Structure formats: structure tokens, C-alpha cells
Amino acid sequence: MTRDELLRILEFVDTTRKLTERGVSLSMTDVRWNLISYAVRRHCEGKLTTITGLAAASGVPYGTSMRRINELIDEGMLLRRARSKTGKSFSLHPTRILIEEFESFAVQLKTHVARTFGFTDDDRTEDYYFGGAYIGSRILPFPSVLEQGIGYDRTLRIISPSDPTFRSLADFSGNLKEFCGGQLEIINLSLDELHGEIIDNAARDESRYDIIAVDLPWIGELVESQAIVSLDEIIEAERYRFYDFHSAAWSASGRNAEQFSLPIQPTAELLFYRIDLLEKLGLSPPKNTDDVLHCAKALHQKDGQVSGIVMNYGRGTPVAHTFMHTLADFGQSIINLPSVDGDFSLNHLSGENFRPKLDCEKAAEAAEFLLELLDYAHPASLNCNWDRRIQLFSEGEAAMTYGWSIRAALFELNSQTQAYGKVGYLPHPPAQGERTVSPIGGFSLAIPANLSKDRIGKAWTMMKYLTQPEMMKWYVLNGNLSSPRFSTSADPEVLAFSPLIEQVDRMEKRGQLQSWPRPPIPEFNAITEILGEEIHDMLAKKISVSQALRSSQNRIDQVMREHGRY
Image 1 (cartoon, helix red, strand yellow):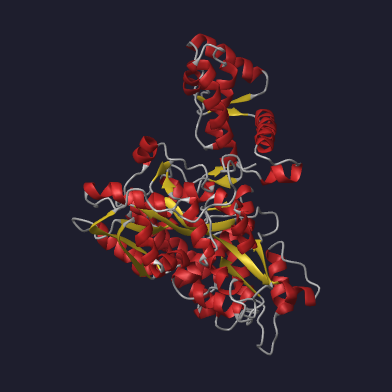
Image 2: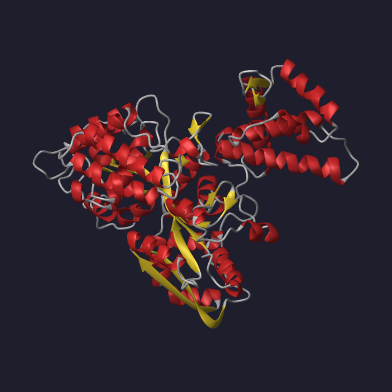
């Protein structure tokens, strides 16, 4: 069970207990639960628990809470750890005993709730994700129109990338205008053009756009520069139900537990492989990076008809992202992120958390892996971007590639391609001994901070409409293989349309989709620019691995110092 799902279960239990403890006179305050709930929650969130904070969460007077806290320490449920040399300052942490007991309780509760919703055996209860929308009809209807349209007094403008979802919105803008009852304009730009226009727009006195589509790694930059509106007050005022969203997509659309955007087109980077070509050579799908190398070598045809793999090694943003994702396969982030239970946290970063971690052993292993793959890669790899690599793979010129799940539509939905009906999908195979992590990417919708106040309500209404489950299904059936909502992924018509959506849904439930491989910090674009130069020069054999990593480390370190990070 993932940390996000545990937190959802905690919130559910806490809320139901409050109904009886505070709402009616059917029970009394459960001090033990309050203490355990607070300690486990803080641990899962990667936050420090002090004895003062824990006592305050107990719901009873200080003296009573201290006795109960000491009981939990004596039972081995809580660990007291010194925070200073004198030992007078200390923090409290749930022990392995408490964590295991709570996880056991959470699994039993989840199973009971799953069976309530019709998941009748062990295999199916594992498919249930706590908080997902499973009540009511599983078949989502065709999108209905907005009861109160956005109006025709002014055109509502959305700036977005030229990715599948937004191309669909632009292509079917006539339908969309009827749905939303107003004038609507969708502007599609390339990724770099989109980022530049969002930054330029933030500097204007008044925004030219009502809604902007934000690439997830840009969130930190836009939040820190106050370029987008916080949605927390709107979400609370409307009691907006967001638990149906995938946790990875929802959390990546915010910053430090504050929400700034709504997911619309999340995507996971996977390993695509030709099932038929692997079976022909008796090869199993790769389980780790060593297997990826072995399969690439075995599948590579020296006559050039089929390459073992095609890589996204194009200079600039493509190869920079490839390196970040590969570094995650080797268990490391590009900066010194804090570790929480063997995973990395993106919350409340400061100081040393911004220091780059590139001139080290794991980064060298990741770089060497990319160099070794080059021997079996399609010759166009050094010039490939996201579209080009998927095109070459779909045309049968490579047996494997890494690719964003949303781009699989190029061959999943086109029977004329060589790869049609022959592709298997895997989360990123990790290095030996490392956990499986696939980077989550894609776009969320945000409201510019310099949008006139009288327009914010309509922008929010449109964002809600565009991200509702029925619209997500509409995008899928129009060729967008992406769904950030459990209810959409569970729709039988969606499941029948492509098996890839269910597979990504399962990866979310297992906690394999993560945003830390591309940390959403304000310096992200500067880091991308640096890696895009240094790693490409390394792959082009202009500089050595050690030179590329040392130069990247020093240049990014300089950026962080100039920004006053440490």
C-alpha cells in the first residue's frame, strides 16, 4: 500500500471518528488513536513530530496526554530520538512495530470497503484504490453541457501544448463551444514556446489567457514567482471532490500540500518493447537495466533494418530529461532531496536540498548505461525528440524505446504501423537493487495570477468542466491514452479502448509513478539547459563521463548559489 493511500485511509478514519466523538454523544475521545494517527500521519508526510505537537493532537489535557505518550513509548510503539547533544530536545517517531500494525489495520479496512463496493475476491480487492470513485454506474455518459455556460461576452482563451489532449480540444473546438456555452479559443504551442509565453504573460499587467496548461516540472517556478493562483480556498469553499484523481498527478499539480492546478493530461514514461521480436529470440521482457542492455544487444541488427532501441538523445531538453529519468532508475535525484521511508520528498525544500548530486557514483553509472545503449541505438538517436523516437519505433525501425504513455496512440490506434498490436509496456526497469520508478509528466490547468478578478470564476468553472471524468473519457475515445481519474480508468468502454490505461492505473496504485525524477523547482529549466548541453556532448564523445558530470555539478551549483539557495 502506498503512502498516499495510507494517508487517505487515515483521513477517512479520523473523519468518521470525529462524527461520533464530537458530533454526537455516542462515544468519548480516543486519546490513543489520536496520538497514533498524528504520529503516523506526520511520518508519512515526512514532517517532524515534537512532544508538544503530539500532546496538542491528543484532544485531552496535557498531563493526560503525556501519560498516554509515555505508555506508547514503553510499549515500543513510539521512538524517542535526541535532536541535540544534551538530549533535552528530541523528536518522536512511529516504530516499525507501530507502522506494521497500522498497515495491517489499513489493509483490513480497505478490503472491507472494497467488498462493500463489489470487489468480491482477493485479486479484485487489490485493484481497489482507497478514495477512487467506484460507486454508481461504471459506464460514464457522454459529456453533458454546462448548465450555466461561460457566456459569449468575451472569448475564454486557453494556452496549451500541441499534445494529444489539447490537439483534441482544438480540433473539436466547435463541439466544445456547444458544451460550455460560450466563446472559446485553444492556442497550441511547442513545449519551449509554451514555457516562454507563460513567463512573458506573467510579466504583463493583465493576462492574455484565462487558463494556462502547465508542464508539471514548471509548477515550482510558477508558484515561487507567484504567476499562478492558489486553488485551496476555491476547493474548500466548493467542497470540490478531488480524491478520484490519481495521487501522483494531484500532488504533482501542487506545491507543499497547496493546490495550484488540476490534472488534465498526466502521462507516465514507460519502456515500450516489441513482443514479437523478443519472443522470436526467446527473450523475456527486461526486469532491470542490465536486461535492457542485454535485449538491446540481442535485438540489434547490424544491417540497420531494426535497431535494438531508439533513444531520446537530442540536444537540449530531450537528452536532459532522458538523463534525469535514467538517474532515477539508479535510485537518485538530480538534487539532494530529503529521503522519507526509502523514497524522496518534494515538500518544504530548503538549503542543502537544492545542492546538485551529479558528480558521484550513481550518476556515473547512469551515464555509462546511456553510453552503452548508444552502441545498439538507432543512428538517429542523437537527434531524436519525443515525436521522432516514437515515430521510428512505430515504423518498426527499433525493437524498444522509452516513451510517454500518451504518445503510444501513434501505433496503438493506427493499424498501418509496423508496431500495431505488437507492443508490451513496462514501468522503467531499475538498476539492480533499486525500486521501480516511472516518471510522471504531462500537464495540469492553472489560472494566471494576473487574470482580472471578474474572470477567475469562469476560468475555474471551465477547468472543472475540462477535467471531469466524462470529459476524460471523451479525450480517451478521441485518441488520448491518458486518464488521471480512477473512475475514468474503470469505465468498461475506456478499458476496451486500450489496455495501456489500466496498466498505468495499476502503476499508480502500486506507487510506481513519481514526480521526483524531475523535481518541480524554479531552477528546473536552468538545470535542463545545462544537462542538455553536457550530456549530449558526452554521448557525442566530445567529453568524458567524468567531465560531463563534473561540469554539470559545478554549473548547477553556481545557479543555486546565484539564487541564494545555500
